[in-house]
Image (cartoon, rainbow, N blue to C red; front, side):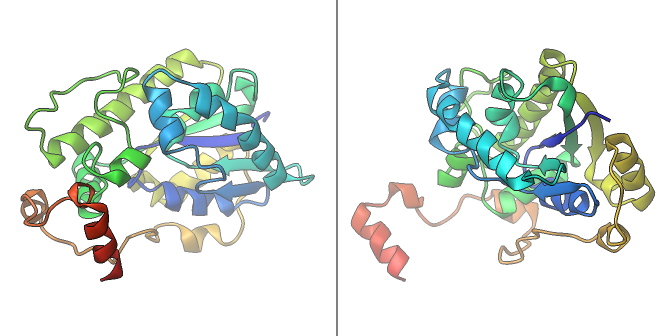
Length: 255
């Protein structure tokens, strides 16, 4: 196997943290969820609006940190950061890492479960600061699909976003055909035998810890109540934090 780097295309709230833990159960990997720099926020937003300068400026630092993480150990670098498909993943094979050394795990989750999870933790694209920091702006120039913003509900925004990630996955495979791709969903990753097959395809040797990790939920965000979908999509009686004055925001933070 020539694979030296493993990344993931996923929407977030789809098992990426769990995938990191699984990949860490190998004798030959350095597995990180979101390596520094994370490559999200304004550079990512600008990239999706056609301005690559900020994200391109971060790429040498990203590559340096990747190589520092591996060091002299001759191990496979793994990162499941979901900002990969929203920006820096397009820059990586162009002058930094040969496609033949890269594997990409396309990780999906049942769409209704994904929507519920995004709504539960209030990670809604286009609706709040978290949506701007981590998720795709709804009217970005690079988007492959488009939706009317007027009267857009949080549910529809999440559904659009997940479909957009799926479209980007297919286009990415077409744009970079020499990369090794493995498709899977979260349910399959809970199956120990499937994970063993995944490791074999990637040329990884599992450790004894793999079986005990497989099927264990991670990053469940229990601090967010598990409300019903109907409760989650109801309009909040509280004003959006972004609409408050600086003084009101300060007072809220103090509380």
